[in-house]
Amino acid sequence: MKKKILVVEDENSFRKTVLKILSLEGFEAIGAENGRTGVTLAQTEQPDLILCDIMMPGLDGYEVLTILQQDPTTATIPFICLTAQEDRSAMRRGMELGASDYLTKPFTRTELMGAIATQLGKRERLKQQQNNAVQEAIAQLNDLVYYDSLTNLPNRLMLRDRFERTLTSNPHQPCFIPVAILSLDQLNRFNNTLGTDYGDLLLQAVTERTLRYVGPQGTVARLNSEQLALILPPLTEKPQVEETARRILGLFSTFFSILNDEVFLTSSIGIAIYPDDGQEIDSLLKSANLAMHQAKELGGNCYQLYTSAIEEKSYDRLMLEMSLRQALDRNEFILYYQPQVHLKTGKIVAAEALVRWLHPERGLISPAEFIPLAEETGLIVRLDEWVLQNACEQAQLWQQAGHQLTIAVNLSGLQFNQPGLTQRIIHIIRESQVNPCHVEIELTESALVHNPELAICILRDLKDFSLQLSLDDFGTGYSSLSYLQQFPFDTLKIDRSFVRDLLSSSKNAAIINAIIQLARQLNLKVIAEGVETREQYDFLCENNCDLIQGYYFSPPLAIAAFEQLLTERLHHSFFVKDL
Image (cartoon, rainbow, N blue to C red):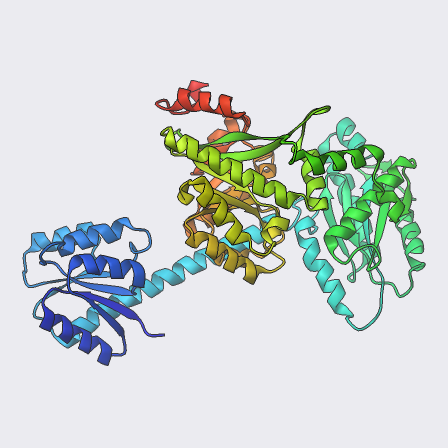
């Protein structure tokens, strides 16, 4: 691809001469007869290099340089000043403003091409350095995020990849793949009584024994402090699954030797089978988890295969679903807003809109209870649109009152993959008359992974409408980190699970620091959610996080309480001493 060079020169004959030389040298050359046109072309054409005359009527070369340096999209473009003067003070002024080099008129073709080659070479080297830094950060995050530091097992994030490998290893041979969740019944008791160090040794011993049984054809992953997930080797006959379950239970029939102690453990095992109980790892894990809890209810130290009867909804859950279907029509939902604080200025610069359900009989229902139900039933699509519409209308009211806030709104994965999403979002924002620059759409990684190419197109359409885009719960999804360079996000949102344990977990602290470094390389903002303590706040300040959100500053607030907080903080920045 030809390199593009913009020539900003008011002298017509000289400009044409330079453009002709550049074209003959194989460049794509474009010209501007004045500074104003030059700025416009630089911003729209994004050239690889700019040649600009200093002395021009109207907008001179210094002013062109100043404008372009203030625009992030053009600030890194090499800028060579052209001048007929040899005044060193003028040259110094240009270099101080950000110029890359100077050429004094008249100059030879050799001088021109030499200066261009030097600056293009520098830019290519800078791009390569930035790309290397991004790749190093991605590799570091892969090591930190996808493996458990205690057992060195893959964690939940790696299960999808391992499951896909199992499926593709024998694509033409019919088979059943058991996916199990193994819960260690007494592990928490050992942790609470003898300490987590003792419990860690016990978990490591369990891991070693389980890995030996599963072998290289299976996968063992750590889900949490007392649960392992197993993708077992494929079986040719379904009845073999029960024999496999009995053998796993048999792993715990003999004691574990821990610090000269003979420790006995029991386990509860739930098993789901591909393809009968699910086609994807998420649904299989869900089914296995339901079966595991059934095994626990039966007293533990046993296994349970998933059946459809296990997942039958209780009467209360069914009633809740029926109420949820009517809740939107009955106007039972309300929005709360949680402030987002800029760490450098201490100001409230944004707020996340969070939906709450005010049930006429049960009162305020937690989103943790009704959001999963809304996603399962598909009602999340209508609910997401209601949230976006009401948040945009409220944002417009606040903007009219003089509060220039960005309002962040979550979109579910189901909503994101609905046809016509972009048109509906644009219609809602235009109806509310809110400035789209002050609306941020938050998406989780899981919403993007099923069709990354389509997701990139949708995100770019939203970005073209001037919306802000945020990647929510970063580090907890399944997407390849290499896709992050292609997604046009403005913000990475560090998941609260990393923030919560950052002081007690060196791994979490390292993950947060790596995410911040990665964001810097990609020119993204970083917001940490779930900030609840002074120590977390101090850590994020020291590591140059951009924004925080959490109970340390404020819980989610109803509109009246949020407006009161805005009024109190309008001329008063948030700092620790203020609380």
